[in-house]
Image 1: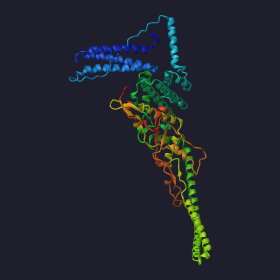
Image 2 (image 1 turned 90 degrees about the vertical axis):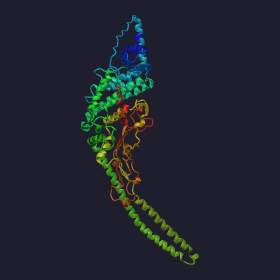
Image 3 (image 1 turned 30 degrees about the vertical axis):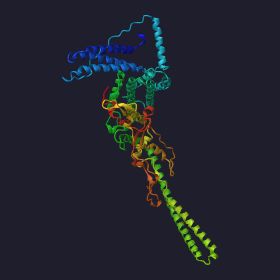
Image 4 (image 1 turned 45 degrees about the vertical axis):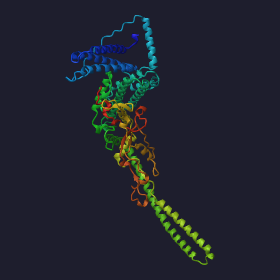
Length: 598
């Protein structure tokens, strides 16, 4: 059944066989030889062994892309590597006392011999084999139609194909074809839209293509849980695709808003891509484009937008950029918000004045009631002095009832005065009093689609650098110590959502806006540094202590602002605790920046 195998499969099996026998031959040759006799010959042997290893690795990588399970080959590959290194180690161990010998991986290339598959003699048998291969392909792929990337293809047609085919592809036994098609679409976009700007109406379609791809990758991994070499490679491609889409979206958003994004740059560091495991030429080409784009559009940490690096406050680059946007596009909304804020203050002050007048009126009434109580008390004392008591006891009882009744009226009036003097509920304003701060908040509350997509992709792209699972063997000197990754990047601060605060205090007892203004939470949200104070801690408690209309009014100007992230829309992007975390806190030693295995 040689003709039923792909050329890469033949290469893999052939060179695995050659490698295994070559290692055995070198091991036997090294037995009984002195370490310093044939160093040049050993170097030549091991150079050829490493060359064969390289060919085997490339063939295996290509087969991984086809969705084949190469776990067994990977295990054997590790054994072969260990065997070669053991031969080298034993051979040079005896020379260490005399001189030091470095053991770099040699650059000698191994020339792949020509493999000629014999022609099929029986034509009828060949037809049977082709039919069998077709049935095998349909069984593996299911009814996944192909997509033609000719000169007439469009993003809309690609998105339509991906959405229509996703369900059938995800339910089939092999998602490789579907994944490869979306990869090809995204690589095709890199040819044009890292230089030219993508139309904003197509942004969400491109992002949806990426979402279909990432969801399919997770389904694929769930079905091939033991194919760890395949996981590493596909994770690298997933990260590359995500970073590519981020660059495309950044380029399109900057072209649409040059006056806003002028001087501001990307949040991603191209150096973090040094850990990717990529062999295919098309992936390397796309990677180089992404690296160049990120390098040309990075202007320093203080100019990163939608980044959580550095300090988080009103003066962070993201909020400065948001201020520019809001000043251009949301100034009219700010005017409405300011008018609503003034209405709340005005109505609150009117309530204070009303209560002051009422309290004063009640105090005058209390004076009259006080005089009545004094007269009733005097009458009661006089009645008590009348003798004989038995004869005047009804008079005493009547005087006592009159005095008690007057006392009740006085007590009731005092309670009314206390209630009248009690300060009305304070006004908690939904936005800062400072216009610049208010504009920065409005940018996030009513963020436009292109900036919302860019903000989410910025965090998702950075998050893909975080090792998976959340507890991974990526720490220590050799990168094999188990580390609680989430513990390294979690955020302990409480999320005090500006969005929830804004919606909660749009309406109050004093004023309700004519139009219903409501913000909706986004994946990248903003939070206050400190909580809103309790109502009893805002302003004077007694209306007599109010001296101006600003008393009893609270603005969130001092509450500062910061970005918060729970993870992206995909379940795999969030921690099981649904806790906050900062993917920009991931140590670069975990991302491979210090361990280049390009």
